[in-house]
Length: 181
Image (tube, rainbow, N blue to C red):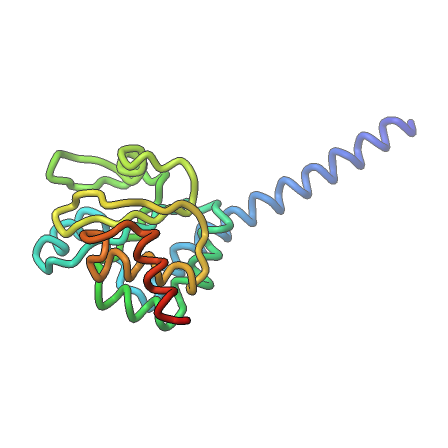
């Protein structure tokens, strides 16, 4: 009898934890959509952004995320709401927030695709991951992981101001930091 009671308690606890975890996952999924919709950054759908970038001659910033990624949410809550980051992205980039697991149809010049297929084509295997593209859609470079605003701004300026055409990121970073001292 004691053994059966212990098993029942363990099963009950496991069910409670599983249900809480499942509810948390649902909450996080809706939370990501809410951030995109309420964000001060103008986020675009990938296929629309390619057309807009070609027309505006602005480079693209592509934020690959997943609904379950904790560091993706941290990037949304700390970096993508920072006033300097928001202002710079909106002025210099066509911004894309792309769910790397999405099956939603995208109408790309090379044919139909999805967020998951685009992420695979970029070699994205960890999240968040930020990629920068020329207005033509040519891949310039990607940076994996969470970045606080004070780090992220260097990548934005490197690509957004066209420094990538003249020097490596390390040269740009060293030069930018030497001006501060």
